[in-house]
Image (cartoon, rainbow, N blue to C red; front, top):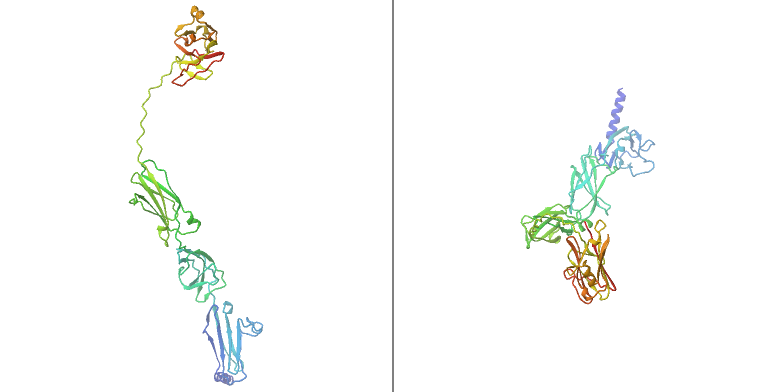
Length: 473
């Protein structure tokens, strides 16, 4: 037992005297995601021809159970460098990931000693950031908000234009709201957010992206189709309407609209209204009749409203005097039923009873005048009385002397002038009870006016017939 203890003490003394040590850069055991760690073993360089061996989880780094392909010469992940003359050996592990968490031992077999270094790689959050949204987008800035990720202690917000390949990033953000500044006007941007912690950021996590466009600094256009309603006379209110037109078509930014009324080049007091960018009408109270001008202006935060005015004029007239009421008419009395209906069937002209009809006769012609009896009447045509110049023609002596003849049946009464002469011109009357139809015959060549200076006459060639309808009720 004393010999074994002496041998162990001797070995320790030899190792110490050989200057053996192991160090890590950076110092562990906890390491940040995607960093590099260098493990170095050193010994007394006077021990020429001696070397050290690295074991990964008790497996030779060159063996088949090694997590690294050192034997195959792949140096993208691990490098092993040994300098026997200087008395040191290095193991470099690059791009640390969670899979690089190991126990690394540097063993010096000829001394029978070793040293262990634990590598613990902390993996950042693997949950992608969700709920990314932009608000308060201006000409040169925008505010980004997003949902918090469990276990994340910091965030990185990145943005780029649609034509850029590289992202501009702002890291070490501890809040879920961030305002991006220094943006270009009227430009489309993409934005993303990464969640991280003390281990860094996980690049293998798919990142959500959102798109926004900064405001356009061009002045807005005037509104289109501005029009004024049709108020009543002496209206106290009036409504003006419009559309956004070119502003919508060209994507111009309008943050507000103002509308006002002017009367005689002076703004009507209290008429100015500030409206939202999506409103398309305004109602004004008018002080009275006059020639008004309605002014509608569009605005944004960049441009002056003087460049964006639309104007329409309208006249509000005074009250018209009320119409004069029509006098109350007495109830219409029913007209008495006529016994005669006097009309000229050839001309289709209706005459009042007692009103003469005018016609012309040709000397030597035979003239027949007929009065028709209504089918509803039981009176025979022989009951009709004929007069010539107010003398009854039924007198047989007058008929024979003047060449008249009168006949009648159940349909009509006829007066015949067998041989018309100038002596026959005059007034003829067909009479029944208290009503009559009159005819005035003149010789051809004499002008006669009919009914209020409106001539209604016809010439008879050879045989003249005047038909008068007689209706008995």
